[in-house]
Length: 353
Image 1 (cartoon, rainbow, N blue to C red):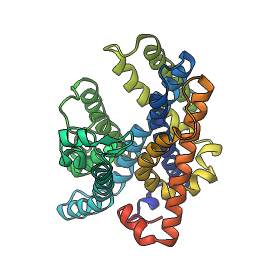
Image 2: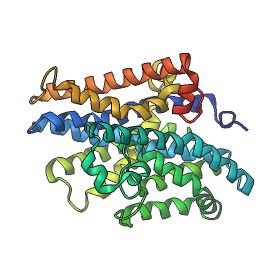
Image 3: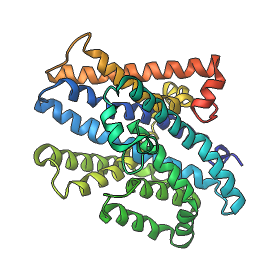
């Protein structure tokens, strides 16, 4: 049974809108590298913008992606050995293969040119080894943002474990994974613990039949909670840096921010945006290709101009990097999907537009 038939048209469109929007967020997070490359000192006003927007709002891309993945996956999950085998093969093709492919391409670039600008160099590759760069084991992979694919692939393979918790203690399981995320040290683990919490929560809501639109009547409360959490964590980072209690503020900001962003998609201006809906089909391709394109755009900046100071210059530079990267990757994806569908299918693990 198709997942699309199990959710309303409105919910389905909001998921598609989020796919495009969150990819833009992903690019926005990494666009800060441009300032790190050229600014000797970040002005206070620009630092405030980075903290609020890049460090918090844009980073909602990760928990929301995990949540949507868990929700859609468990709508049709079947706890049988044959279904698990088919699922594992499918996820290997659609997730693991693109992950390995783009990491391998980046490793090849490093071996040929001794570096991939702002991604890695030959010294780091020799120190950690090709296998770690390729698999992203106990370090980020060669294409840093693809760590999400590494983690979500692991969570799909652990699907029976999540399903057992959902079946036996569904709501208590949310508290369990919350506690693991909050209090279990991340150091030395191969995956990010935040993913488990959001992936499980999405799956639990799907299996227990919770209406994702049920909270719409509390939209203003949800948005208020999101704003309070955002203000609190931004204040801590701006004035205190990263004290030991910072992670508690940040992680709860991700929780309330995810709720707030979902509630915002209930408004037609966002949840039914024709622009975002129309580009959702190539969002995965944009995600796969954005990092090298963004990094080479930052590298190429030195031949055009040097954004070395100023708040508005910094904001404009990051906006330009984000928009141009999104446009180039989207355009390439649309061209390949239309004129070289076989290449597009290989690059995206045989995903269809």
